[in-house]
Picture (cartoon, rainbow, N blue to C red):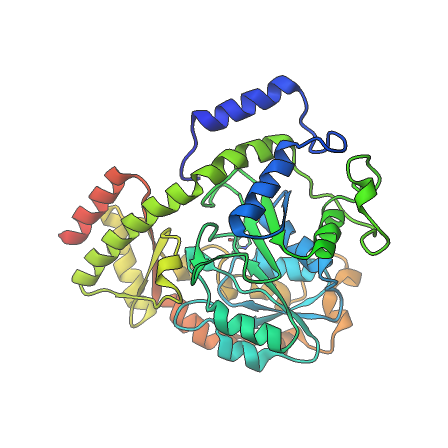
Length: 388
Ligand SMILES: Cc1ncc(COP(=O)(O)O)c(C=O)c1O
């Protein structure tokens, strides 16, 4: 969380005084959750928004709403938090993991080569606030009739060629956990344009909404099925309404700090990873490239000792394929009947052979992520360190 203050406190206090913390309060009553959903959808230029417990569940609900399930293949990149892969497996589908390109996001060329007649969806991930090559990815999805689900957990507020991230595909999925650009401690949301997909996502997120008085009338035979529970309380909605109002301000400040740091790094001769849309970058991070992993590690150690927030991708906890692929490769499912590979002819040992990911491993291991500071004082300190 970058910023929170008296506005969030007041919103929570106001809400508590009503003693109504459930997200449904009867037909026609605009609750905090519902208002946030409308505000988020409008911010993103979409028709519908749905607030829920996590970014992972936003991906799950999107896939359920799109009818994705056992036997289907869903393409994801090698560089993402494990949740993206876990969400695919949760709906019984198979993650097809594609290398990242020089921009450290899903490589469109490799995506084209990975498609089979079982591919149903693609999940590009805008990691570290950096937009993917959405033009190429969207073209491929349209040509092959694939569902496009953007994982925007780390990039809310960014854009690709003027279009808000999350509004380019069929679904945009956001996370509001503690580490995200705006946050309520935990939380997630999806946005979409299609009314039926929205109703199905509502049902996936709350098995009971088709029974309750608030929404019962809005459902029909195409949108009623057995759902789950991913509901949040009004507290989440109230906090996020305030956070959403802060979003553009937060991004502007981060972008300005990022530009100053990038300039300084450029002067010092450091190489930065290429960007698919420089103007749309959220400004949260700077990806510095080195010629090999040893150089990246040594520089990261120097920077950390000097006081920069420097993290080599090689030691990020669960964000790169080599940190999580073993769970898929070894078919780690507590109940064997829930193992999705039983519905597929693809064998995890071949699908996830380490050699497949070699281009990503080399690129990512030779990269350092520098977190851009939000506070101007911290920025000054970091600029001073880089200029010595
Ligand atoms: C890229 C990415 N996708 C998905 C998620 C999942 O979000 P959540 O933690 O809200 O489930 C995260 C969270 O860190 C993430 O970074």
